[in-house]
Image (cartoon, rainbow, N blue to C red; front, side, top):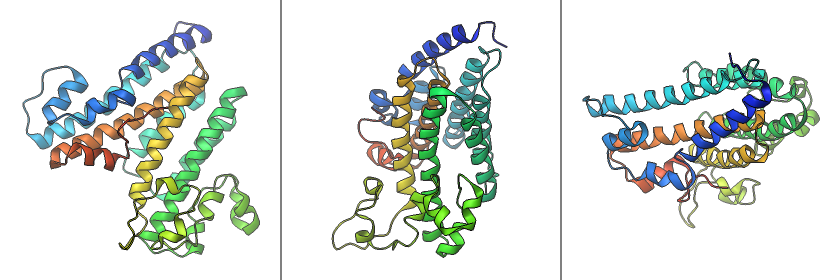
Amino acid sequence: MGSLDRSAASSFVYAKTSGLLAKSFIGDNAGRLFSVQSLRELYTLLFNEEVPGVPEVMLSKEIETKAARKFISQYKELLSEFANPSPILSEILSFYEYENSGLSDSKSDREQIMALWKAISSLKGSDRENLLDLYKMEISFKNILWVLRLKVYYKFTSEEILEHLVYSDEQSKKSAMSRKNDILAREALAILDKDISSYDDWKKWKYAQFLNPHEEGVIWEIDPTWIERSFKNYLAKAYKRFFHKDPMSITSLVSWFRIKQYELDCIRSVTEGLRLGVESDKVMEVAGVSQGGVNG
């Protein structure tokens, strides 16, 4: 339990997270992460300690495990500064652990997402406003990705897909008009009937900037994996803006958590790329990272 009062704890945590963020491999520092030439070099860059004498396959797993452990350890240390941390700060940790448990399916996903949505809705003031805006966008993206995966990989019909989306109000499922206007589902519903093999169907889409590249005369199909990575990069930039928007707030710490979670995804991409011998520019493309990294 922290020994500082809430104001002092918030001030200390903001200073600490600012310092940690400055050392993170995002923005201008992202290039250092994606330019390493070996797993041993990556290990040294991330942990600044002697590399274990283990085979490459084991070293890649050790890097991913150690990086995740370091991230969560830092976050728990930050939480310990508060005598009574806001419930949302524990909820995002629980959701992270759930997502990384390997137990995810669409029904459980919806339950976890709604638990987090309710925790954010219970906040007050600018934290509630900021995090509802951010999380509304994040859930909208998740719904869009569910639609794309179910259409592309499982050939679900539009009616079948409706049952797998997250709605702000579960009653929305019962009414076509309510579904259409639901703040969390409406963007996903807007693409239900788009042809996954027709670029013309998608080129004027609200999120067309995230589409996988199209070349005239070449067969094209929408790529959910490409779009997911593009979304993650976009969200990381949004969270970086909100980290600075309201210093010493719950929003700031939640934003730090999400930025570091994105950094962890990038570390995993680099680790996998090095293990498979993929060139760094291709790894950046696969990770959904532009040459400038996470800026904004």
